[in-house]
Length: 210
Image (cartoon, rainbow, N blue to C red):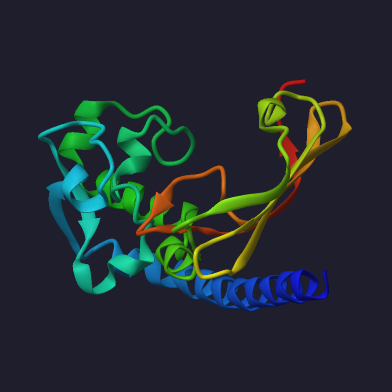
């Protein structure tokens, strides 16, 4: 029990250090994003990310390899447009406008880099999933974003004996407004390069239907 407690303490301490590093990188990435978004190449999505292409055969935008770690490794740089997202700068725009406007395409790339700031580092610093085994859990994922309070947690280990953990919760405090947490390592999310992303999300003003 003492050994398990020490490994858990060590895991949380390491995650905290990683989180501080990622927060600093995220801050740095915001002023760099408008510059980085100028340096792109077009490649097949599945060949670059390792995930199925949203538009097979269509070249998608990516940062050049030298700086690609600054974008999320599981999606292209133009995902804000092609992934069906809403908000600035895609709202009210048509495909014809997007295809004809280099400026709009550039803004979409910048907005995506801001939305997923320093995600490549979050993957590199993630938890290795080889031999991953869940040791303890409370899984209420079925209630996620359902308008009902939920609290899920997992404690897990891998082949190296490293302890990992994840907390994912939502607490509604007024009508459809809630506090949302996603901390530890993103166990319910995708695996990139054999690792789970570092999770650092504490959002007190989320709003979902209830």
